[in-house]
Length: 114
Length: 114
Image 1 (cartoon, rainbow over the protein chains, first blue to last red):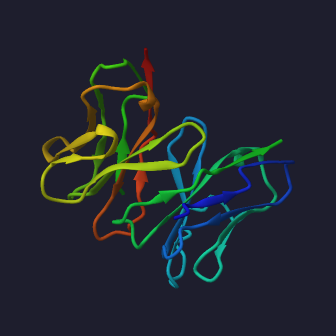
Image 2 (image 1 turned 135 degrees about the vertical axis):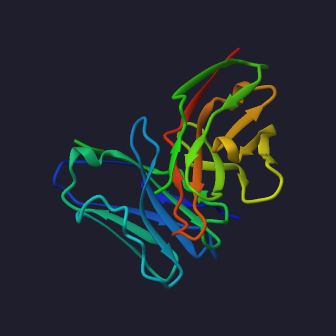
């Protein structure tokens, strides 16, 4: 079946603009994660959705970052008033349940803020 | 909070040589351990995982890893490296009884010489 998809694959934006990044998880996967990967760094956890529970937002770096998940499926990560330090690859992953299950990652969205 | 250390930023090996990538974690109890691989421009793919039982786990693509509680390590090994193994490798830890959000190491970049 189809894997995790993300769009756009690349996004170049000007400092101060808002951006939306989309993630389509694998059908039936109840858990969805967003990570940020900066050059030479590991994966930085941003936010975690599990079923109908309130999301774990503990990794969001500032109030400019927000995410929602509609109908337990598609998720959108929004970054308002983008800054140059927001430039990174944003990865989405889904899994069948909590993290004891394998995470399936999308190819990522490369965000460049000029 | 748990932490994951991958001491080697880059590792260079010749094709056909053996490989060992190091991973150390900091956590009081037995964690759940994962190794992921990321090829250029791709998302992460799970190579193998350890939850309990036999401390030597086999994964895909001929990789294996050994959990050593006394050393708080979960090193990844392969007896004979292929050029296609060139990629970024990430170790990840999930703590039992916690939020099930994984902590990733910074990654080790594997370079394979012909």
